[in-house]
Image 1: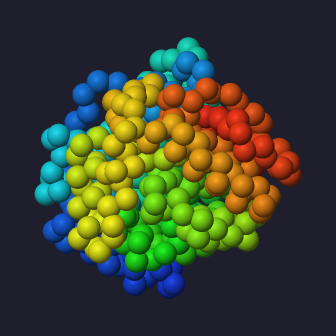
Image 2: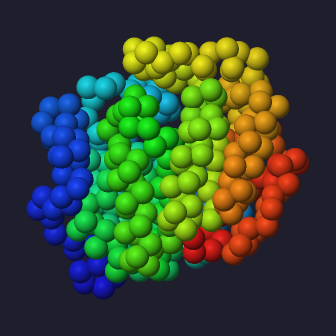
Length: 354
């Protein structure tokens, strides 16, 4: 491996002026008592199969165990052994072990979904720095790094990733543009407006950027007004394709979500809607309760209608709809008018620069 492949200095505080207040608060939360990072040894292999793509085509790699953004719908926080007081556990030696594991593989994956259980851009410098080191290793082996985030990407981290942008695809996730609702559902994530600005910055620097509207929560974030505001903002940025998926529930996810909603004066729109939904097991995921299929279809059809009016195509995430057929369709440069039923479903795959 070339000398310096893993070298990346720790950066000083370099938060942009328009994001400094909010992200400064998150950084203090991360670094002064509420969220800490400890380094631990990883057991077993790094790369694992995913439901995306053909077998072995897209693998996953977690950088850490735990959660920093404390989203109310987070399945990591709902795990039986999870504790809010437990620090984020970062795995030691990930870049070196990844290089060795890839070197030993006769057939390299096309892409690695990096850190699916922990946002790769949390409010902590160590995690974002490790992400760049891992991305450099993947790029060295010609493997794409797929990143999905709700977080704030430090300017120096974005600069470091820019050198690797041909090997990076970033999906920025949204639930709402309403600040008060975002604070309830995603308390330590970047603000929606900051995420929109980041999309623009990433586009100008030549990154492949996509957007996701998920998880959709019935009666809360799948309303016409909420979706219109998100789609209008994405349209202004030139986004022409989004992925979407509804929330799924396990008992602990339901409890923490409903608690967050009720404590902040929001009606419980979840319990009754999911009461008659099926318990399903998606490939690679534990069993969970889903909205009734007809309810999801109506919600996706409404989203598709709103998106089509703005020239945006919608891909329904197959991972969160295991009872839907998995038909795949390419994303055209200028999406034609979409038929609402039957729903055209696809797994998230890189198809174009958006």
